[in-house]
Image 1 (tube, rainbow, N blue to C red):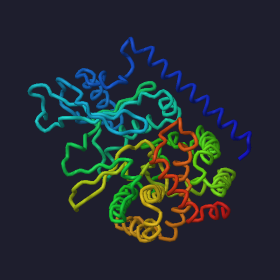
Image 2 (tube, helix red, strand yellow):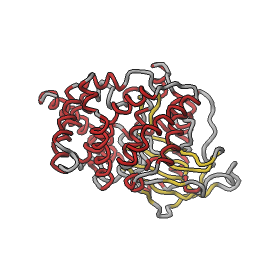
Image 3 (cartoon, rainbow, N blue to C red):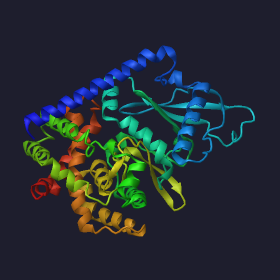
Image 4 (cartoon, rainbow, N blue to C red):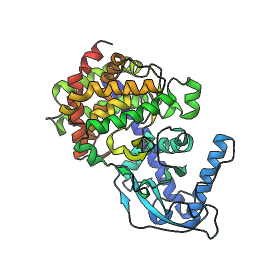
Length: 418
């Protein structure tokens, strides 16, 4: 990748970051009028505000579906914060307790709490999130796709975005005593082949459901502008962002990011157009995009222990193996993965076949090998540009595992063979 091309991409990212900062500033100035969305838990835990958000979400659903949608929550009479917050790298996630209006239809069966997501406090992360668009992407997913996913995801009560801010009101999965949620520390600790097999079965069900949709149908469900790899407005920026992170990541963790790995990353960026062409040649399906263990949960379903997913901030159209390799490489220790990799991939292909989609193991493994670079860069970028996102033991674990996988799988040979 030439220095000029990298510079142009960096300038484009800078311009979008400045525009993002301007939107954040405009929302703060408008706060005195009450027009922006609330960006503090205390402001959100208000009955009138919550009823307004639920109503706005209902109107959006009606406009999208063309039919009347059932209100997701009865009329709220009172709301309060119980002081329960959850781990997140870029949002504020917390519970809100609800009381419903006396005699409100469905109040007896309605949830006692909702899981709320709003932007985090840190200005740098807010600028970055708005510049890259992963908050608007999750809102779009909640508005258009959440109720179409064939595996369990949290029910959406409200998904609203205005300016630089957003609010998600979701099902609180903790209310279900049979549900186990995982966090990033669980992913960093590493998972078992048995749990990985359950996760891949869920992936197969989701991937088969959307497999091979035509371009117009894909665009109607999830517009291509959100894909930071293929969208014309993001393609060069994404390439530049990865290039900018490589050398700082090498300096930050020379024991994980070797000189050979740096050369491999640069080779992929030099052949970026050919890499993208191979990654996104159809048929495509919906991929979660951040499919590690920390974004999965287990629950007792009709067929025993089943897996659902949360946090669709990176959902996009790709090959299903994108989710498979991302989960396995991120969530399993390298020696455990190497010993079980072939069997797990074969199991995923068999699960796809049960849902009517044929994928040969040899083709699946080649895709698995090709997408390993995306998983590597999810570790390298925050490691090299740590001010943008989280930087902790989870990032180090992901980088260590993905670096080992890229070397073991021969990703460099794949790139050279394009």
